[in-house]
Length: 204
Image (tube, rainbow, N blue to C red):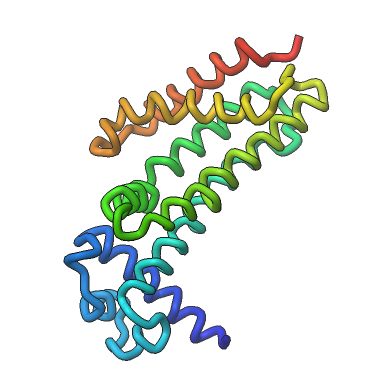
């Protein structure tokens, strides 16, 4: 596939996701998506076929984007030079940023709204999004434990708990993603999650 064709396909998928997020699946049409992408309607069909295929592909691309952002936050935990507390707090902050970004919130809304019509997409999100993040976090924590930086016997459980300490309060503060959470609150949530996590897993 040529570079130009890949770029055009990407532009269509991003335009489709914006349209579906704004109007919902049932109220969106290929004509509007083509206009949003700045291409002719036949171009959308040539690249991605019908509306159902377009929705599936747009959702899968959004899962890829949002997961990549979340995984990037874990780079703070890759062989941190300074205090583990600082690394965890920074990772927590950027995980929260990725959790409350517009794409992630729209993705969650569409997954819930269209769960009956596209149940497999929720499985795809779980497998290629949430599970990938959890596995990567558990791997980072296991490496820190092996290096004596943390005292962790079960990295899978510890990773699950760290994510819960972040996302649980975030759901309440954001009122289930209906309120924008200020950056100062995100920092505070990351700090509180780190404090609680280290009460259980700090190295002796």
